[in-house]
Length: 105
Image (cartoon, rainbow, N blue to C red; front, side):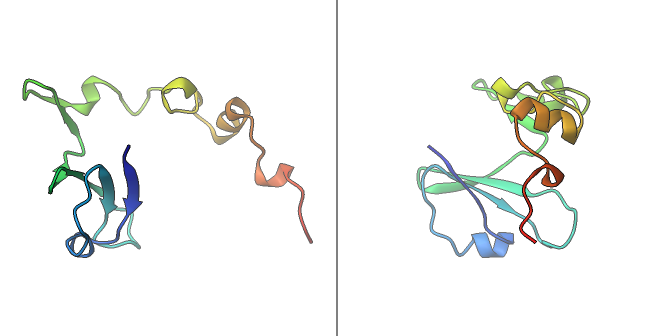
């Protein structure tokens, strides 16, 4: 089991104890739109996860676009929403929008 955690910057992560199975997201500027860097602790070492590629058991590097593109719709069974709009996602996941919920005035 992995524990996913946002931990601030890479410097902040360097102060954390390595814990086997933990996965961390870091960004250098939390106020920006930059993509997070991902890190995983395996055994007693910490590794940075390649953001745009996967490495198979034979050591071959595969670009993530070989498996999924920005236009793909990922079904619910595989962790997606099965939709391309927020309304469609809410319908598929059977959740209400803010405007559909009871408001405490």
